Image (cartoon, rainbow, N blue to C red):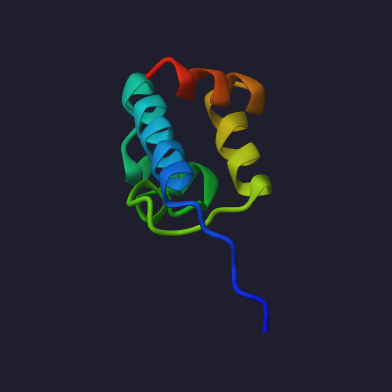
Length: 76
């Protein structure tokens, strides 16, 4: 049986970047969930492995590209 790949440092960095974007936009976790049907609270804990498709939906919500999302991670 294959084990799921999980890079804790990467997932933690992604979680922090998502929280940063949400805080900058002044969007609560509840509002984000209502708007997107994505349970952002679970993602922001940094303990779940999200899909690239989910990350793209999150980026679309904040009006940024995946490239800009990861560039922003380097500037933290």
